[in-house]
Amino acid sequence: MRSETSRHFALAVTVGLAYLIVGVLSRTLAQAATQTMPVWLAAGVIFGALTLAARERWPAILAASIVASGIWGMAAHQLGLGQALVFAAIEVGSAAAGALLAARVGRDAESLRAVIYLICGALLTAIIGATLAAEFWAWQRPDSVYDFEWQAWAFSTAVGCLLVAPVLTTFRGFQVKRSGGMPMAQFGAGAATFAVFVIAAWIVFGPDATQRFGSMAATLTYIPMPFLVLTAILWGSRGSALAALIGALLILTLTAAGDGPFTVIDAYEGEAVIEVQAYIAMWIILVLLAGGLAASRRQALAAAQAWRLRYERTLQATGVASVEFDAVTGAATWGEAAAAVLGADIFNIGNIADWHARIDQAQRASSQAGWQAVSQGQRAASTDSYSVRLGGRSIVVQARLAAIRGPDQAVEQVAALVRLVQGDDSEAQHG
Image (cartoon, rainbow, N blue to C red; front, side, top):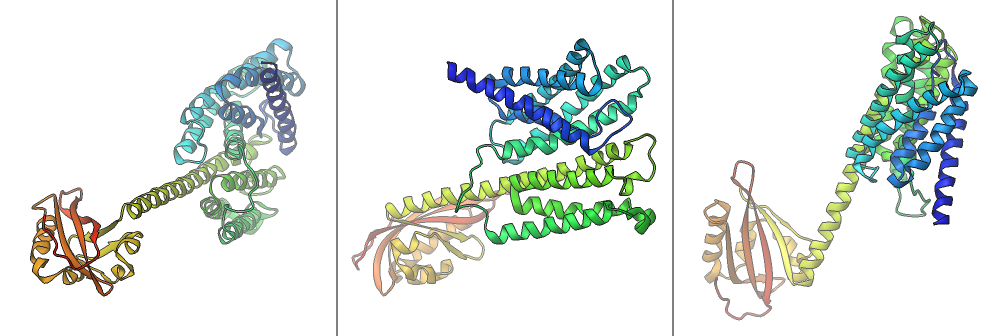
């Protein structure tokens, strides 16, 4: 019991300190005329920690977050204790609401479904927090502008959650492996596309970009985006989360320094940084979706390969070979276990006509009739036993054919299981 309490306390301290540290780092990136911080990555610390943690650890995280948010409200915004607690309740409460949605998917962070829930949770956090915070600042600072405060809170919180939370969730339990990871060719291709992204982002958002490109500068902001999406596809969930974080910080830093197309006209100090975060949020969503889609595809391929391996091993252990015939062309696709059961010569049989040609002539008509009935949809299945010559010897097999129908109920393929009955020239029985 004591050790569990100690773990909860350590988690609470970690989250609270991380919030304050990331808050200080966020404040160094940009300043604005709004009460709300124009860049606020600390929101992602609370949102990510809640999304990641088991529900029994939420009280410790929520308590630490409220304390840390209250301290920040008093130190950074000169709020009194009561006002700081209201500020903390808005910050933590909105993050908890979004995390409840994001955590519904479970603990599988590397899937497209998990990414979609995380995005929706982050946007919910931003909208709830911005609506309440704009009212709070209108109450506390009557000279504040509601629209500006809402935009600053919504965009900075959304970007903070979308940048920080994926890094926390995808790197949960990460361990450096000497083997079994990403192939070097794939890693190198992702590194190349990310390097192109960095170069393109520096050119478009860098110093004197508006002077060089004039009115086209805003249009050119779309150029870096495809390269980051390609990086996400190549690197998967973890790589895309890191790439998005680094890329966003680069663009934010350049914009805060007064560079890039978003700094042409500012209605108030810091507006460019707030506006560029709306742009960043859109391509972060694309990057996360691309990374989640790539990860889901890899998971599906791995699962399919695992099931195929189990299937082939089972067939080989029971002395059964599998084959699929195209119902129209008769082209054959043999399973990997076919050679172990019937011999290597089986792969020389490329279609159903070749197979029938190997069958004993006296038994061939019966086999062909069964094929015609199944491939034309007259029968669902057919089973025959006959002698077939493979590898210079005659063996007796039992073959069961079954029709596979498409959406229009027409037979598209014929699946067959071929079982070795005996390996001599004895007379076969028909079934």
